[in-house]
Image (tube, rainbow, N blue to C red; front, side):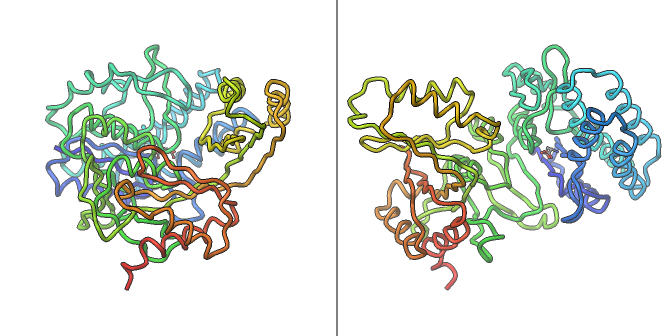
Length: 454
Ligand code: ASP
C-alpha cells in the first residue's frame, strides 16, 4: 500500500492534475493522496500560497481585499473550468475566504487559516474531479484524519497522539485525498507547518497508516548529486540513505522538506522521489541502508548561503571553565539558533543564519553582551558566507576525501574559512564566501563525480 504526495508543480493546472489522475488510475496500490496548493505554471507565475499571503497582507495593510481574493479564486476557477467541474465549488471557496477574513481577528491565526486554504481547496477540487472520472475517492480534512499539531502559528509540530487516529483510516476502502501543509491544534485552530510543509503531511500520513512506500511526486525525475542549475547533467542518484538525504536537504537540496523524513526514518518506510511528468521513471529511493558504491566516494554535494560567523578569540580559552556555555547562552537569550560551532585552541566561531541578526541593532547588542560577559581579546564578524557540504556514507570508510575536497577548492583559489566534520563522518562542511559558491560546487563535483562522465 502506498501513500503518494504531489507537489505544487504537479498540480499547477488542469493538465497536470489530469496526469496525477492517470497515475492514480494506473496504480491501485495508492490509497492516500496528499496534495499541495497549485504551484507556478511558469517562471513568472505566482504560487497560490503566495497569493493567499498577499491576500492576508492586503487585509492587514490596506483593508481592501476584493482584488487579492479574486486572484486566488481565478486560479481555482480556471482549473475547475478546464476539468469541467461545476462553479459551485468556487462559490464555496469564496464563502470560506470571506468568512475567515471577517471572523478571525488575530493576524497570526488569520494568516495560517488563509495559507491552509491553498491545499484545502485543491484537495476538495481534486477529489471532485476524481469522482467525476469514476474513481472511488473522497476529500478528508486533517481534522477528521487526526493530524493534531502544536499551537505554534506557521511552525506546527505533530503531536504524537495523531498516529493512532490516522491509523484508524488504514483500511478505508476509498482513496482519501488529503490537503497537505496544515493540521489542527487541540483547541481547534488551523496551524500550518513551515513553508513546503506538505511533504511533512505526506510523511506523517505514510507513517500513520504504515504504508509500504511513500511516493513523493515533483517535477524532477531524480535527486541529483549536485544542483542541475549549477552542474550540467549531474549524476542521478538511484538510492540514498535517510541520513544522507537529511544532510543534503539541510543544505539547500530543495526537492524535499528537511523535516519530512523524520517520521519515516523512525519506522523505516522507504521514500520514492518521482516525477509526475515521467511516471515511467523509477526515480530515487530513500532507504535506511544502501549498498556502498566503490566507484563513488560521495553521494552528493550541496550548498546553502546566507550565514554569518561570529568568531571570538581569547588567550588560553581552552582553560576557561564554562566559556562556551556562557557564549551559547547569550545566543539562546536572543533566540538565535546555531548552525555550527567550529573551534580552535584559543578561538571559537558561532555560525548562524544571517536573517536572525537582521533586526536593527541585534548584532550590535549581541556583540556588546559578548564583550561584557566574556571579555574576549578579539571578536570578528564575517557575513555573506556559504557552507558547501559533501555527503556520503562512504566517507567513514574511505581515506582521503578531505584531501580531494581541499585540493579541488584550492584549484579554484577558493579560500576555506572553516572546516567541519561531524562524528558520524557522513558529511564534511566547508565555509566559504558566498561569491565562491557556484565555483566551489563545480570544482567539487568535478573532483568527486567527474570520472562518471568519461
Ligand atoms: N503550499 C505550501 C508552500 O508553498 C506548502 C507546500 O507546497 O508544500 O509552501
